[in-house]
Image 1 (cartoon, rainbow, N blue to C red):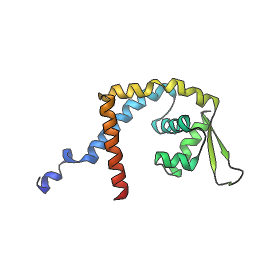
Image 2: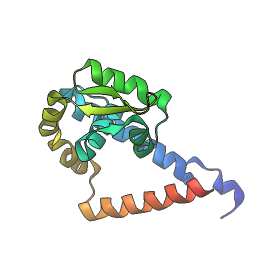
Image 3: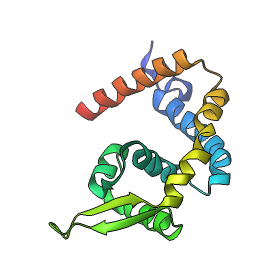
Image 4: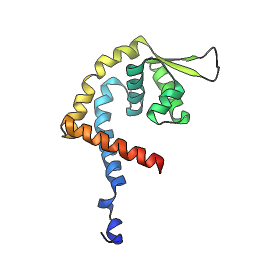
Amino acid sequence: MPDAELLRLDHQVCFSLHAASRAFGGVYRDALKDLGLTYPQYLVMLVLWEHGAQPVKAIGEQLRLDSGTLSPLLKRLETAGLVRRERSTEDERSVTIHLTPDGDDLRGKALPVPRRMLAATGLTIEELRTLQDLLGRVTSSLDEA
């Protein structure tokens, strides 16, 4: 392929990922409206539902978010009564995030979200797994680059 062709927008994988991410965001916005969550808040809740109480640092590592982005998210979730923050007695700098009973109950209301998103993609579960595997490889390669 000639170099000039490589500069076409429709040949940019990054743009395809960006466009897909924005499309996902729109569908998630609608799917999460009844839960009262934004997409980033939903990601935090997924981590807590899956793993239980977590230090802020561990949540940030799993979601690839820095503390400057994560802290306001956690404050909003706390204000909504879904999580509580607890400072470590051993290390005052460390804060652990715990689900409240309301946060735990919200999990049941969130159960339909993944199937709704799967249906919205138009992919089969196998195709979606293949896509996740490919994106995981791309992410690992880019992290190493």
